[in-house]
Length: 230
Ligand code: APR
Image (tube, rainbow, N blue to C red; front, side, top):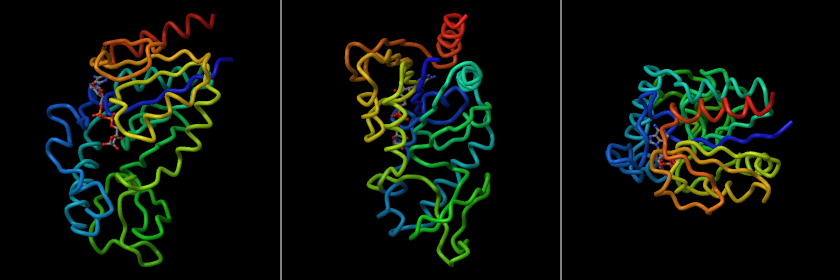
């Protein structure tokens, strides 16, 4: 059975209503990375960082998976599919996908600010100053900030090394080490990239580009893969 790896970014959740990062109305146009998404930001102004992620967590509570998330969940019923996401939303899980690898963490989880443990499920609750872990550390979002290690990158790399097909959906491929995963697949791996701005993304020429929205193209591509299996 073919091994399929899917690498997703903020674009797959755009049609569900969640902001991407680098579009004209993206998060990084309205917030400074250096004020809300770095360890220095946390040391400078914990409340501002908590407010940023509490806002995003509340936005997540209002939205639902779209047909792209749902068709990937269906694909997992027929192929061995590993989903690697840069997203901290839980829309893949809400759509029914299993074993989703969150490279950059999850909005619905929190951890201690120093030990990065324990990882606690908080659903959509705010994290407030004074919310402490059992060992007495201030709780922070379980999100990988710029400048921090990406603990699951080796796992992601190993999954890509076994891929027969790699489907890249809704990422500008501007953030490493996630973006480097496209080079971790075997030379024989078929690579598809789905993004309305696919032609503006700097990728090797052998990658098949679909300049389309995720909710349009992902279900069609999944159906083609399912048909090819019959
Ligand atoms: N369908 C598919 N792709 C879309 C759609 C859509 N409906 N709408 C937008 N896109 C594409 C954009 O064209 C863009 O290429 O999604 C991509 C989103 O790119 P970014 O905003 O850079 O988001 P992403 O690539 O996920 O960012 C990676 O950067 O800020 C960090 O940790 C953060 O995980 C994030 C990482």
